[in-house]
Amino acid sequence: MNYIETVQWIFKRLPIYHKTGLKSYKPGLKRIQNFCSYLGNPQNFFQSIHVGGTNGKGSTVHMLSSILQEEKYKIGIFTSPHLIDFRERIICNGILIEKDFIVNFINENKEFIEKEKVSFFEMNTALAFQYFKEKKVNIAIIEVGMGGRLDSTNLIIPEISVITNISIDHIETLGNNQLKIAEEKAGIIKKNVSVIIGRKISKEVRFLFLQEALKKNAPIYFSVKNKEDLLYKIPFKADYQDFNRNIVLKIINILHNRKNIIVSHQSIKQGLKNVIKNTNFKGRWHILRKENPKIICDIAHNEEGIYLVNKQLKKESYEKLHLILGFVKEKKVDQLLRHFPIESFYYFCQPSIDRKYSIHDLSKLVSKIFKNHEKIKFFPSVRKAFLAAKNRADKKDLILISGSTFVVSEVLLYY
Image 1 (cartoon, rainbow, N blue to C red):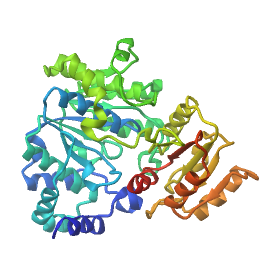
Image 2 (image 1 turned 90 degrees about the vertical axis):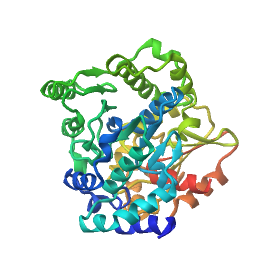
Image 3 (image 1 turned 135 degrees about the vertical axis):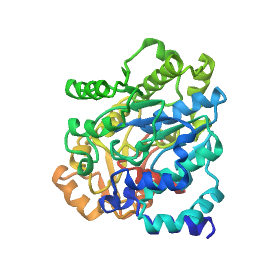
Image 4 (image 1 turned 180 degrees about the horizontal axis):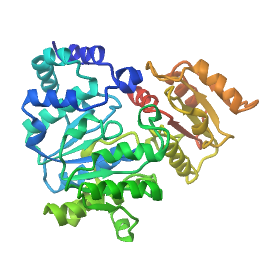
């Protein structure tokens, strides 16, 4: 198989959770343990940092990688989902995994993958581990796919574990309250491994993390606002990225004090400044056009993420706001919509995936929330919604695309 055929096989034979939902979700570590054992346990050949949490994982991973790259370390990144190219999931020093590596990996392990019924994410995880081993990375920064305790990335024993925050998401698999979700996230806390907890959390969740860390003799640190952190500028225009910068700087501090990994102030400064250039990071308050009209996309897709996006909107200057919104069907869309300014122009659409919140169901829901709203329109595709918004928007207006990773990815594909 060539690369195109290989990727088609991957998506066809290994249903992807982010597109098909629960029917492709396979929690548990047995399959990934068997697969990695079959490969010679590549995860044992490099140091790693494990990043879990509800929001902010991707931003944290990319900022940290950029800083360490500036210090001339060879850094691997494993994240999900991808926005445009499947290879975005596995990166080494800002460069996507080679197509030939993917083709060879699948050709060599196809029989095992099929026989053992390895899931899409498990295959990706093993592929990343093998790639980082062969690339001889100094550190791999591994993002948890979902939850933590039963996530296939939880096979690693990292130098540091990170939990960025706890909020409600994936309730169908992780639980319907913060404490239940925190229990799953706490599963990445390892024996004798330092753990960093990010944004403000409830007393109950804090106590749960403290208990788990004590049980495993894991030094635990809580990331807090620090005036000195503000000295390090970031290229993002969204205030919520300040939380993630604080976490990253705490990670650097622990690497220095407990792991003797030296990172200079200059590398921190340049790494944060050059994070987009160094890692090709996109999708978070991503400014596609600065004016005439201004166009921004953000992959926020749960209530906390949408809340932070709308908080940022209040700092923007514009005459009229045009919202292009689409969702997946597990989301409580009514709770997400209540955060958006009601006087906006709305362009509701559906992403091209099985999990889409259909435009038919969305129109019924929206009609119950917004009574006699003249500024609402519905479109069968993201593209048609985007073109309609562009045609209607004036020069001093703002267009925001959000609600789902897949809505944003479709815009990025043809923008």
